[in-house]
Length: 307
Ligand code: SIN
Image: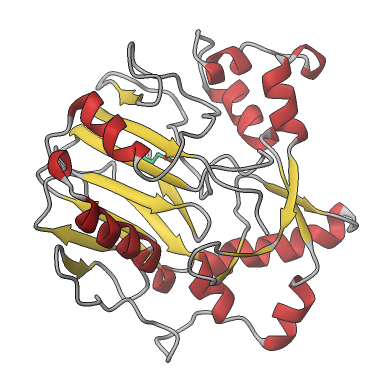
């Protein structure tokens, strides 16, 4: 099960004219240097976008963007996505605060558990981004795993077996975790946490629990790469299979995708701006920074129905 570097690992930087790219890990991820996000011209933006699709996750250090700057930069990738959990800051509906106070002791943090963003929607977000304003001195990292590399390292027989399958993506496990660990409040997830009877779920939550069926192997609309579309948080079944049949397949895939060799991990600094492509990687946040404040701002870009 553990894969060691073979010909499949290729995260080298291409030559660019406007940006410098420094790969983060063998599997994926890259730092982009030589860019101020507040003043990106079209030629530079084209290189950033290309680097995002190549490295799956990219990040910039030392940025000062503010809400207006974040919204403007994010919008260059396309229209904003529906966000399942968070609400925007006043005046900037597409810049959502992810703030955990130093004295917070909730059993869950936003984004804990390996996941791709909002796959229970018919058209899940393509790209997500986070801008860090205040971070713990240590802890609070984010980790990503490359689902195209995971697909490429499967046997031909396994790939043929998965090719026709559709995965059921649902919010139902997050709902159960929220109800167990999250204090009810006036956020979307806090309102869910307050609901005990599934029949009383607000309609916008009920449709996300019902979820969507998507191809288990999807093709990236720009790069053409095939990737596994599966995670441990939202993938709850496979169309046409009983739970007993689907669970071992989903369990194997979740473990295969997230093995250390396929990952990269980012240590945040104030001023770090990171973006990733949900169509081709999964990620998770860590709940390991009790006693420290963490303040990030998130934006998500609309995607297409996975195909
Ligand atoms: C997320 O899942 O988008 C949150 C990641 C993080 O806060 O590190």
